Image 1: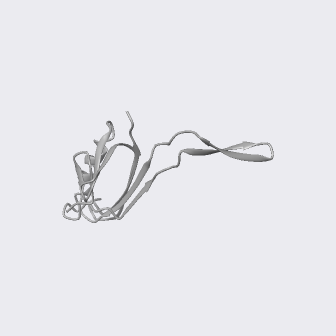
Image 2 (image 1 turned 45 degrees about the vertical axis):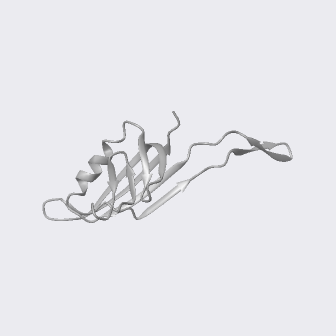
Image 3 (image 1 turned 90 degrees about the vertical axis):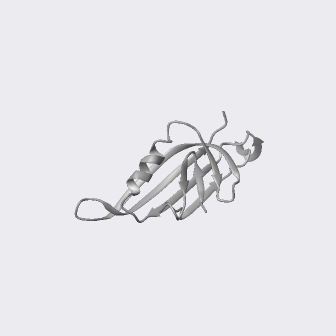
Length: 122
């Protein structure tokens, strides 16, 4: 089983690329408009949704997985969840990689990743 698929990249425990946190933000279609001594709601359209993903990978080869994600940044990617639901197309806005517990040759025993996706409407 897998947690999430972005393009060709699979987040899964079996691949040693599990997700520890998934947050999806769906903003509302109304904005507050300030008026003198008052305010009102105005329909401005629905902004793009965002997904924030974080993971902690405990493996020597984590850098290869990070590079595979990095290669997906240039184009919108199809995203689906572990239950097979199609979440649509998303762009990778940011990939943040942190390495810790380095061993004698500089390889990391722990790689933390955070990934920020933004909904793509093309």
